[in-house]
Image 1: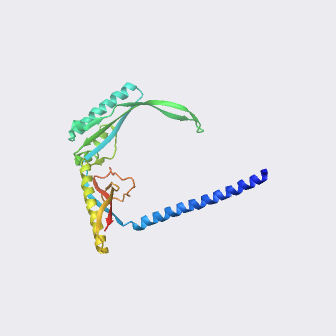
Image 2: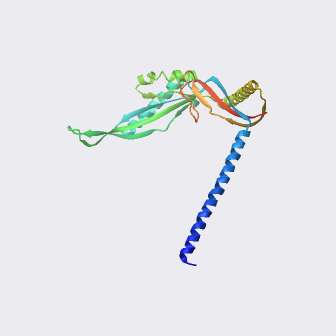
Image 3: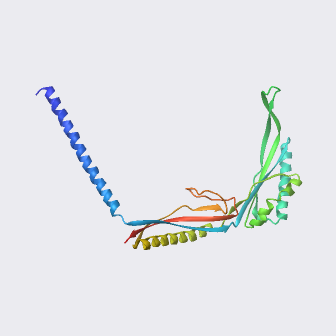
Length: 254
């Protein structure tokens, strides 16, 4: 048998093998499509989403501020800052803040310089201007209204010559876990009632629960225009908040 003849035979056998493979693949895919289609058509269930929300007022506030001193002498900068710490603490205690609610950070002393430029605006180097000592104070308290008021009265410290910068208070809720459980129950009840209403109107009956999942838990400020996010929103800027949650349920249909 010649080499040319062998080559021709193997070429045709290869073509036949490919053709048979295509047919088999088509049959398998076709059967899979029919099976999937039948499963989809035979599926008799309903999915509903329930929602619950509740307004609440924060019961914990965290407020912080920072003050600093600048001096060409390292020890003097540190000494002046410690004096400011003592006067800041006295101010807070006089306002009714408990000592256990006050936390001072460690002192940070930085060497500061300023850039030097010539008359033509070319950079010529750095000039030492002093040591800046910086410290922060944080108040964590359940007396929300009191601390909120104190955060607006830092002019008393400024008048004492303390270079104090106040941050905005952050508001939290210590019973968030209990609130979340209550909202989950309410949202699940809402979803079940929605399902019953839909099926009653359609003249059908609800079967067993086949799937349930919790949606997004959100905490937004009351009367705010905050947008809900996929990962959940946690507002700490507002004292008055709204918590909301969704629950997804799937039932068989009788």
